[in-house]
Image 1 (spheres, rainbow, N blue to C red):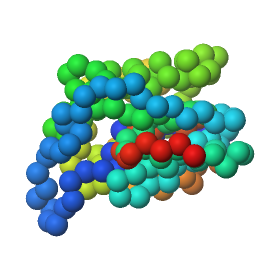
Image 2 (image 1 turned 180 degrees about the horizontal axis):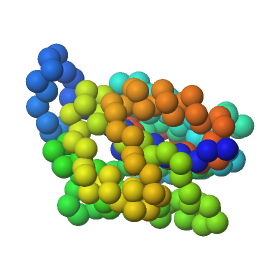
Image 3 (image 1 turned 90 degrees about the horizontal axis):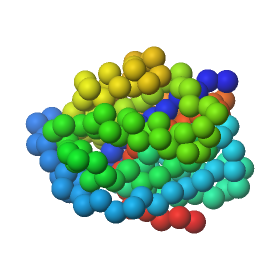
Image 4 (image 1 turned 135 degrees about the vertical axis):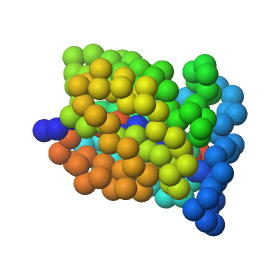
Length: 183
């Protein structure tokens, strides 16, 4: 089984009518609030992530439960809202995710299962339209913590890859943007 992580996948970015999309948006100035969490019944193959404009839905295939997020950080057996205002400095479209967000993934993995924090793949999104910057320092932190290079692409491509690999994986993680609803 492979272990992998999807991180920093904003699902809600400015609507684009041309290639010259300006950076910035409502998340660039988000205030920090405690992030809601979703726990799976198993680490293997959960959560499954589904992406559409403005939302990411995390599913537990064993229980049928799901949670919807604007931005989500998901790991093996868990998902939570990704709040851009959690760390200082805050994440913006211009800066992209910081080292602190990568470290938060590790902290969340340890809190869920301290015995296994290994990853084979780590995905970071540049958003739906590719306007979120890739942060070289965050990329380097992924390499330092897991000895892997992050895969950086637009949200749709990353979620598709995630979905095709998740059923065989003992670990999954991600950040996606949406309104939080737990069913």
